[in-house]
Amino acid sequence: MSKKDLSLLEILIDDASFINWAKNQNQNDVAFWNHWIEKHPDQLETIFNAKAIILGIQFDKTTISDNKIERELDLVLAQIEPEKNISQSENPITKTAKYIVMATALILIVTFGYNFLPFNSTITHKTVFGEIIDLKLPDGTSVVLNGNSQISYNKKTPRIINLSGEAYFKVKSIPSTKAKFWVNTNDLKVEVFGTQFHVNTRNDKTGVLLDEGSIELLLSNGTTKKMVPGELVSYSKNDKEITHNKVTQELSYSLWREGTYIFNNTSVYEVMQNIEHAYGMKTEFIDEELKNQKLTGGIPNQNLKICLSAIEKSTGTRIVLKDKKLLMFKN
Amino acid sequence: MSISSEKPLWQLFIEGDKNAFSSLFKTYYSQLYNYGIKISSDQFVTEDCLQSFFLYLHKNRKNLGEVNNVKSYLFISFRRVVLKSLKKERQFSSYEETIESNQSFGFSPEELKIEQEISNTKTTTLVILLNSLSARQREVVYLKYYSELSIKDTAEVMDISYQSVLNTLQKAFSKLRSEILDHEISAVLQKTSKK
Image: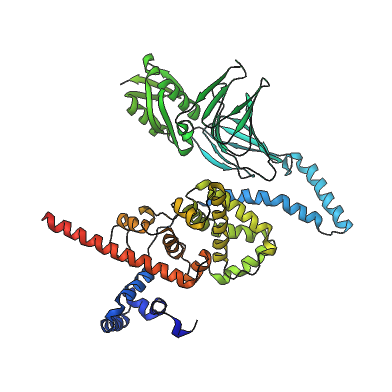
């Protein structure tokens, strides 16, 4: 670009003296440009646009926590690892070098045993009471694991997940291979392509709520059941009873993944069961009729204290915490 | 990180150095994450895209061609990945449709510093005015002032000319300035009418 092709605006925004004027920094420059502007009133619009472009908008930037970045990096590195091994074996290595690799591998097995090797290992993620974590599985599937819950999978088969407790899955579909995704619980297996759903194994049964897509359940009694979005299916291997519900407010059930329980005309008894499972508490209803009182609304679930006081307020009760027991009174 | 210290790092990464890869990942994760969120308004989509993007970079590192400016290179390619994923998932046909219907590049008052050099307008007002710009104008503002890219790099990332970035900025600020002025005038009028 030659100098004469440049517009006034382009010249101004790169001119050190003009930048000083815009930022009110150097008295000589300020005086010079004030004088210049007086003589060129027709350029006022361009002058002020140039000033605005230089000053710009000041943002307060958010940064992602180092912990989270490390976690995401580990996931990427975990997927890179196998590829690296393949390329190593493709490299032309001499026979002796091969023996050395093998020998090292043997020594490793002898010294550390199988568990330390990258294959045959099980990955487990566990939450304590009241903790909710976001996970990304090696295949790209997102999992939100609720408090007091656990998922595990074999490193070799990262799309077969064992679950106890409660979790929300957003399964990454792999259209090219049509690879399925499995969630196993004590009561059933969930077979998935790519979808969003919620699994809860509390209360000696497994409940599955489908948000999006389609999944098939393989019940422990050998039968199968296809689900449609918005459907909630519960099954227990003990009493072999299957129940269906259509969840009208589809968010209501799995919204805890955002850090809030949403209750829609739910009995206080059920509400307290949720708290019991997430925090490992037992509830005692001092006034029995409280159990059937209905509650509607959102309750924050990340902090037991806030959670309880929200329940107290919306039900007009008092909850006293004593030796891991929640005593519930009429107020 | 300055450009001069990045090129050797990039070279190491191309040669397969894992530490260099990790270092690039850590340096750019936040910036690209913020950018992805602004395009997609979706945390899951952004995280998915970042994962597959870095995997792609690693896998194809030998074929990436000459990279002069690492930051703008990453922004260009990551932008493509996010837009492609949105187009596929939500079946949009064009860039314009994707970012308009997604309400991409919306700003919130918390993202703005209270002290703005451009005017004394409240951040809540400035945000409303910023969000009334077209999506393309908001992306230019975002890349230039949030991501701190130069005009030249902003042009490269958005695949438009230097001149059209400049025109877009000029139009955006021209509109902002006149609206800020209107706002200030009506604020003054309100004050006087109360007296």
